[in-house]
Length: 95
Length: 481
Image 1: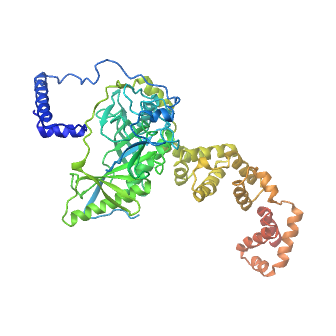
Image 2: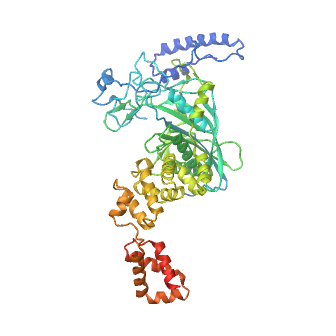
Image 3: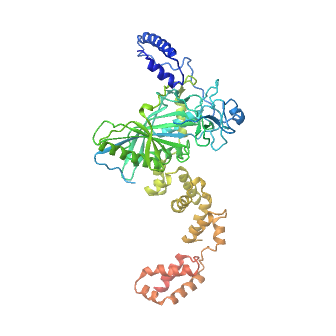
């Protein structure tokens, strides 16, 4: 398996990253060497091994269904790069 | 709406239904999921996607979805995990939605739908847990998009059907069933117009007899049961026409346009999102123990199908009446309260099915908004049963009860509707009517017994509706035979 520069650009686009040509080139190299290592791991037979989603063997603790006091409106908007008196404000999104 | 009875093609439909859960707090944050509040006031740092915040699962998210799973004959996974669905949109501040992917907590279920001419079993592929996004507002500010995050993190369940539906009518019946079940379980209010129940449809057509599915389109933006039916119908015809004129269906997402009654393209497959699901590292797996499962089974209420059969057996209701009255859980509850208080299920079902339902329709309200209590209706039934009022007075009093708090008896007295059963008064009345209508008397005596209605009618008119019609009938019969 190998990663083309086109795929690097595609993934960067999904992640909203702007990459220079040099970065695309070096990331493709890095990714290919990581995947090369994965190929090595793939040689091990794991057909009888359950997938591991979490490294800590712990089950979810559930929370009681109770509402607490929310953040104040001022506090909620405090860290926003832009806001009006009610809403977060972002550049117009047109889909 | 006509049934799709196309000779050469049949449709294949699968529905994805999102139900917003009636929990006290959000899916992963301890803040109420309340609507209609001022923007950005029902949020915590987690809802805003601030760094360092961690989700904790609401136990009712898990309990409610298991209820739904059990009510729809699903298997419940002993272990299931959450997954991140990644995409960028301003109303999703974390950059991902917490959902489930490979391991939905409920899977392989079914439910039975009823249509006029047949019943059908529809498979459920899966039901999984997820959180809602916030709300983007595009039309209030000409240069910006405004974002309200009150809705962000609201608990949802997504119910995915097998592609077992074949007509828009089946899709409608399926949705109705889902709504009924979530309402019986009290896990969602089932209101599609307000968005607490949402539905996307996958629609394709294929020549009859062919096994392989055609290319499908996904329909969105249908905000009522009727619109789902209409949009699917439109889409089926659009696809058939396209194929018949030599074209090809293209895989795409289409929006239902209510004003134009048609679907239009939203995005094509090439523009389809690539969500890069992966296991949510912030949430350990959900383990459903046998104890929890048994506990929830115990909590399950009597569902509509069972209740319907019980009403038919216990109260001698016709199947049609039992179906109508159990369609809405709260209507069925209401009926049972009236029946119990009046100790007369027959009269209670008559009153609920005719008068109460009529008022609900006229005022476009549901039974919870109906302002006459079951106890007051029971009194009304008793008055009639004790022969203190006749049926037309019962009607008048019922209508009067809608606008005030007085008891049936008070109203009957106030409106002078207490039935007159005074023999002397009635005797006089009947004699007068007989004297004033010699022709009718003659014909009655000659055998035209249907004229009894005429005499009783005259007596009711003369007494302003207060005469006891039973007694009048008996007197007329006695005097003219």
